[in-house]
Image (cartoon, rainbow, N blue to C red; front, side, top):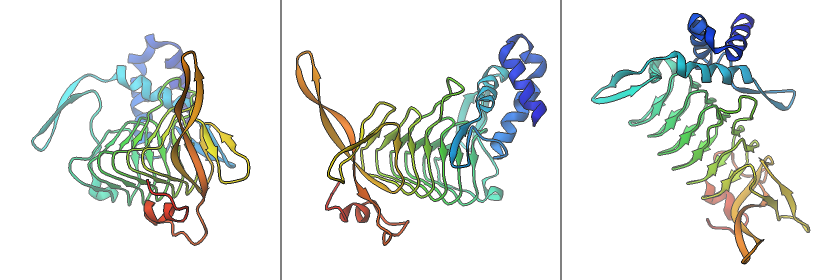
Length: 269
């Protein structure tokens, strides 16, 4: 693996040697596909980005030729094939779920009709619900629920940029959007239609004074969409934000429905 990493860095700095060394790129993508290496991982409580793994993914595209391949009656024309061998991997895949080769999906994951891009990592027991998308390099933890229509953004460039991270036990409500490297910490609950970008204000309103975050939802937070006033040249208007209205209680089961989690705070979204 040290040799592969070294070669990836060499090719990244000198694209003229890509053709002669593309097997190292293919080997790196195979390691990503099998979950042996990943774009980001938690070490001593902190998320570390393995930028050389991202570089391998970016080098994979020019290393591959376009090809036509089929899945039953469906035809695709692309540079990256689809994942295969779901039965032996222990993954449930409902038509028309699609996952690209170079994404890692752990045993016990359920893919409803959805899409998983290259570089993504989805850990065991997670549900990717109907029409949810998991973007390139997104890191999804254990026993996460991505509800219908959720959009988890991809972050491929720049290589050193953190991907979107959804930690263990989080519940992401219907039609939520999480992009630009935002991190949702363990067991947090996002109500339907919450939109989180790197610049979105995430405001904890559960105490006597508001506490503002950006780019991270603290563990076990219950979050709903909100707005805050912003001064523009033509006047004051409301812009979107996210409101932390409380924490999941110890009595809340990890597999609770979104409605049950929000009912504790007398909120319906």
